[in-house]
Image (cartoon, rainbow, N blue to C red):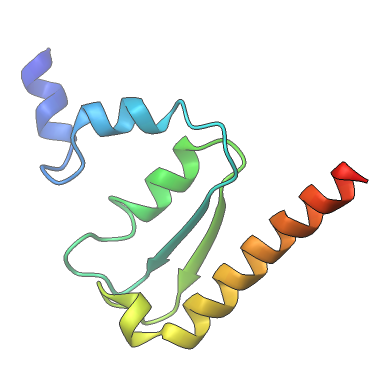
Length: 95
């Protein structure tokens, strides 16, 4: 049975990572390019977003493996929106 599990899990996304991700309780933004040939979105980005309850997923169209460099404006805008929304939420809750 254990051999079957290792066949199903890609080498770069080991089972212990999947198990630790399931326990995340903080706000999470997953950003992944749909043209990533090193870590395909179906093997990493979509699975990560699905495993983290309430995670927000941004799929960068034509985004390769290094999207913060190749799609910096889109990634930065999304990060600022995500972090700004969280900061606004914290300030509202504090009031």
